[in-house]
Image 1 (cartoon, helix red, strand yellow):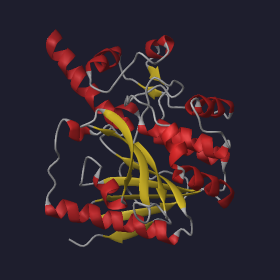
Image 2 (image 1 turned 120 degrees about the vertical axis):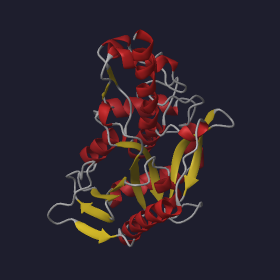
Image 3 (image 1 turned 90 degrees about the horizontal axis):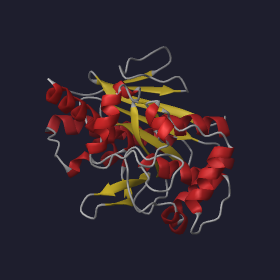
Length: 299
């Protein structure tokens, strides 16, 4: 019984890697049928339409990955979508973990590929934030500044990296630090990450906290690749509350710093796409409400 409980905890904790865009393809491959791929590509097309119609040049974008409801999370992975990205119109600049090189890197990915990165092709969620021009312009400039973007890239990856430490980094931490460097007009250099994190603290950025359901899960996480606890304050681990940058943290911070930011959320399930414009979240069920746009998906 003890061994079975421990293994169950370990398996549950493995899913935690997805909260920060942990590329599970390092360990497994996901089979997707032609019909499922077609459904996700139709969804990606609706996302592209929203980006093109936005009139903006930059968007903070997030997608849902694995089922993280046990952690109270829907969205897991964030990046910066750029209209004039050298990698293609509206390609997403993001941190990802390069399995072959065992290190984090920056990667530009088209919207279709970004949408296909979700774990369950039968449903999907993507959220878009369009900051007002005075906030969008420096963010676009920062994201396209290769020197700055790379100065904020850590050498070691951890899916649950402590948001205010420099030992590790996850994809959402890189996005938060890029936003800080852009809006704080911070200099690049050897201590770029420290300066970005200090600015985030001063501005009241709240990372998580990600609530761990039990001490078993916290303990088992130490044996999951690319999940670490040795950068977190001991009191956070004891409280089962880890301060990790997640898309919800970034959304709340962007809304606070730039209240005129527009939010568009799209989801697909049950043969339809739902589009909601506004800050009231759609929720995991992907059920339309009053005023939402519903787009039927052809069979």
